[in-house]
Length: 147
Image (cartoon, rainbow, N blue to C red; front, side, top):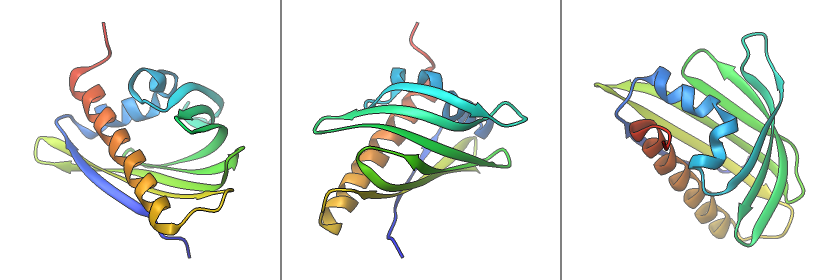
C-alpha cells in the first residue's frame, strides 16, 4: 500500500468559502505556483468539476494531467489520476473541518512518478507540494482575488 503525505492549516473563513476557492479550477493559475492552465472537462449534475485538465510547471517537472474529482458532501473533495505524462498515479483530497471561527483544511497526497525516485525524496516533494498549496489557498481565501 502506498504511503501518503498530509498536512493541515487553519484558514480564517467558513468551510463553504474555502470550498468555493478549491472548486474554482479556472482561477488556480492565479494562486497556485505550479498550475499554469486549468480546464474543466466534465461536470456533475450539481455543476461541480468531475474531470479537470491541469498543465503543471514545477521547475524540473512539467506535466499535462487529467484528474477525476469526487465530491463528498460540502466539506470533502478527492481526486485521482486519469492520465499524465510524468505520473503513474496521483491521489489526493481536501477535508474541511470547522475550527472555531475558521476552517481546518487537511490536504492528503500520494504521488507515484514514472521515473525511479527514492521514497524519502518523493515524500519530501509531496510535502513541498502540499505546503505550497495550503499556503496559497490560505492567502487566496483570506485576502480574496487580486484586484
